[in-house]
Image (tube, rainbow, N blue to C red; front, side):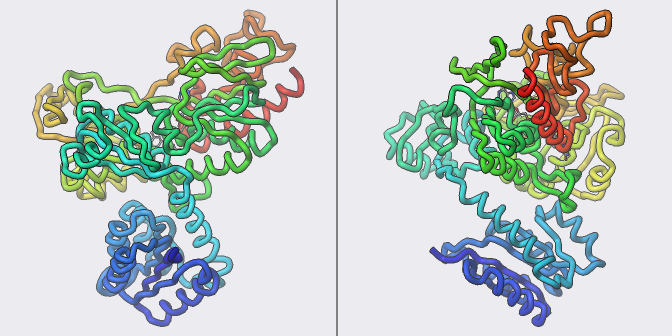
Length: 554
Ligand SMILES: Cc1cc2nc3c(=O)[nH]c(=O)nc-3n(C[C@H](O)[C@H](O)[C@H](O)COP(=O)(O)OP(=O)(O)OC[C@H]3O[C@@H](n4cnc5c(N)ncnc54)[C@H](O)[C@@H]3O)c2cc1C
């Protein structure tokens, strides 16, 4: 197989040669180093590489080039090799441009020139990008082919499931010749869609999530009956607990109902997570955390929902949606929150058919050159608007409040204000939606005047706050009125200030411990928690140290 390419482009021939020389010295054995001296020449080289069917792992581009800037070049390079990691080489004076580029071209890193000594400044960056590139491509998951109707919500769900689990897939519309040909070849009934064709040629008709996950090589059933620790939920909190549980020698299993990463996995760029000054995409961060957990021996089950928790003596039994169960000595609940649904006539009929909750990354490219409506005024809506503005003709943010100031981070407001493709409509809400097999129209209401306006709209992405999914814990674990899980000092006390009613151990509950001893809650699902990636990860780590204390003294 051809060696993957590392491409470098710089208009200064001496610099270009020097970067290529340093790269060749360190990576030449396993990679082909390609060098160009202008953006257009580098694009020609990339087209040739694509024609030969070779792969590009990393692209390093100088920002200050006369005919085409580094950012302009990377924007076009992304269309040819979307998975290639991108680095901008800048002078100190250009750092502003580099930071802006993080949002425009989803930049992975910027390197200040000069990069000497390469052992300290260049190689660690390229090493980590090569690892990220390999991990995103070398997953054991197989390529699957999905055939379905363009606007079927189940087709969308399967694409979303595959994308969020980093399963590579191709989607074929049943209405188009290639889709029809695949249906015929598979002998499938066009009335029973979607179908999934696995890499080994099996056809799954209207498959469940678990069937698709299994076909793609993801684990869905536990290999053992008893574990030290069961972690429920695979967002940052659950991943944090899994990494620490596994690395500290606990037999740990992580159970995730859809895809590891949780809410963070849907974030296009997390800019405030410690150690990533250039920001990091949520799926990159959480994919690496999952690999880290697996490296430490944690078993990860996908598409398995936990539906019951039962304390049995000192054991904690966790039951799944298919009726099966596993037993653990301790449990960490990290089930986070889910988006609230927007309630207005016509909207529910179009969920998955133009109306999406969350960023729906699989759909971003389909919005190219069209108008996109985003509902919400918090960071998640702001990040999505910035992301969609790279593809859409215009992004309209619909905000109920009078401004973004109260709900969004300052840095994001500045980015939105400076983005000519984003329009912010404050004091505005959606009051109706209409369409046939896809969203076609939205009715918007001005909350000050009550005036209504109907606009043509094919895409609506909703980010309106979130609620915990904890009904299944009712009667077992104490929760607050909104369903968030109470822990440690927040648990209701007896009148004399002693531990909660029914609490058996001869000690107070630990800080993250719920009303059931040995069951802990971390991250967004925990009452009064800080809703941040860093705090969820930190609580996951801290819960594991409390699990040890529980195991030692129970
Ligand atoms: C679009 C977006 C952008 C964001 N940007 C930032 C940011 O820039 N910086 C920042 O700090 N924070 C950001 N946040 C917030 C941050 O992502 C959350 O605070 C964080 O993900 C919470 O982690 P968690 O593990 O507690 O829960 P979640 O991320 O909600 O994960 C919970 C997981 O549990 C699973 N689950 C739920 N119930 C069950 C069950 N019964 N059985 C099995 N699995 C179950 C879910 O499928 C989910 O994967 C953002 C959030 C969103 C939505």
